[in-house]
Every structure is written in structure tokens, then in C-alpha cells.
Image (cartoon, rainbow, N blue to C red; front, top):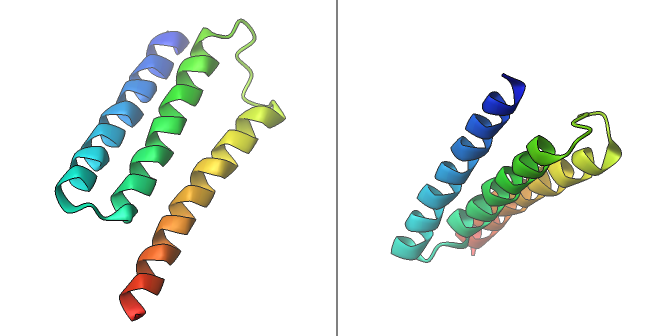
Amino acid sequence: MEHVLTGAIAMGFAVIALVFLRYWRTTRDRFFLFFALSFGIEAVNRVVLGLSSAAHEDRPAIYLVRLLVYALILVAIIDKNVRRKR
């Protein structure tokens, strides 16, 4: 059951990444590109986590990937606000 839920979460992240990618293609706004990359990386992370034999979420590598994802989201927000002020 755990693998099914991990797959569903990965699919959800992939769908969200595709939606943001579509918004980026329409508007060419980097904000949506950063969000698409963030959710795409998280989807791949979940797939790798689901396929690994030792699926423990307490490994540091998993948290480093999540830190990268949250940093990308933070960069997107900061970039959007800085560009708006110019």
C-alpha cells in the first residue's frame, strides 16, 4: 500500500509540474519555470524513493533534494518580487 501512495504522490507532483510548465510556455514568466522545475524534481525524488529497496525517509540525501526544491521555490518568489520592483 505504501508504494501505491508514493506513486500517487509522485504522479501528483508530476501533474503539477506539467501545469506550471504549461503556464510558463504561455507567459514565459520564470516564476512558473522555477515552480515546474521544483515539482518535477520532487516527482523524480518520490519515484526514486518508491523504487529503492530501503525506502527510508530519514536519509540525508532525501532532505537535501527537498532543500533544493524549497530553495528553488524561494528563489522564484524572490525573483518575482525583485523584478516587479524594477
